[in-house]
Amino acid sequence: MTTATTAGHDLDSRLAALFANDPLAMADPYGVYADLREAGPTYRFGPMVLVTRFKEGRSIFLDADRWSNHTTRGSRVDEALAAMTPEEQEAFHAVSAFEQMYVSRSDGDQHERLRRIGHRAFTPRRIAALRARIQQYTHELVEEAREASVDGVADLMPFAYRLPLMAIADMLEVPPADRERIHVWSGIIGENRRGVDPQTLLPALGAIRDFGEYIRGMVAERRRSPRESDLVRLLLDASDGDVLSEEELTAMFVILLFAGHETTTALLGTGIRDLLAEPGAWETLVSGAVSPDEASEEMLRFVSPTQWAWRVAADDNVVAGEEIPAGTTVAVMIAAANRDPRVFDRPDELDLARPDARKHLGFGLGVHFCMGNALARLEGEEVFGILARRFPGMRLRDEELTWRGNTMFRALTRLPVELGRDRGREP
Figure 1: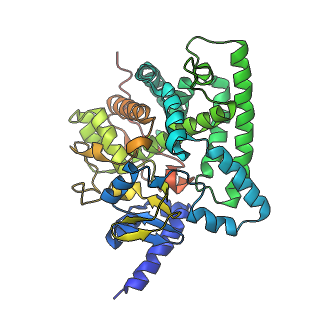
Figure 2: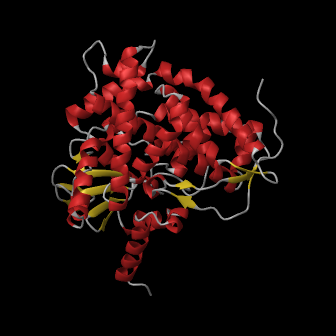
């Protein structure tokens, strides 16, 4: 019989692999999440407390006063800093100073101000204007994937990462010629999402500096040649005086590009894989029994593009009877909460007609609810809908898939599919 101590040690080793971005652990983290939920609503792992269930995770998201988003500090960071060299500590503090200007790393008045400004990029009018472009880009990119196919097999991962990049770059008015290098910078900064790994800190600092130089050049060019409906000018020179500094603008662009790009890549790539892999799911979508927006919402729950979210206890708190001292780093395990059987019936089944799918925690809740949620939903709706109508016979290629990047935003390295007969674009 497995003792509780042995079971806990096994769970710790599996969690260590997950947080270390081990590709095998990334391939199927849901067994770990299920065991975490069964171990209790909270689980102590090293210097952190993992919050494993929906009820407790939702409560933390809704209480921004007691749970800080200043996650460049806290018990997890303290332990990591103690093991760093002076050079690594210097890089950490430089990166942290930049990240503290993120809307997603701020609290209180600073957060309210940054969020108010950031919302100018996500007005309903701006989002609606992107629908036709997203449709156009989806058709163009999938045609490229079809033309590049070998023996009838197309890789849809380039499509899954390029489409969100093109959409968010359009909204932020980034010239097409600059998008690939911005993707590279975003990826390097994204690799540092743990924030405490010496191997990713120095590259992230270099990417932040390069990105900052690029933004300063963009600002200078826009000041010389203002454009109609220029988002950069709107962020810098608003008539109400609520504006960003150039450093804050760089941070805003980084977080908008990353949040609007990397997370949606995870949704689309993993979502297509799961739609094709889960019995009957693809056929349900193709048949029209559910709408693409219903399918997209269930995919957000099932895939959980952001697997967890960091918080730091601002005060001495208690979660489900567990005392959590001020300064403790907490990880709300979103992917575990989104499959909590206490909330969702048959949570490990992909049910595109699930009536309560929209309850998921994929975008957080409360004052930190994801600003880009409307854009992510729009992209999921259009991509899943267009693919189902255009390639109803699409099938997942039977081969082993591998994963890359950070477990928090896990993504496939390759997504091989047989597209089948192309019905062409809708009239």
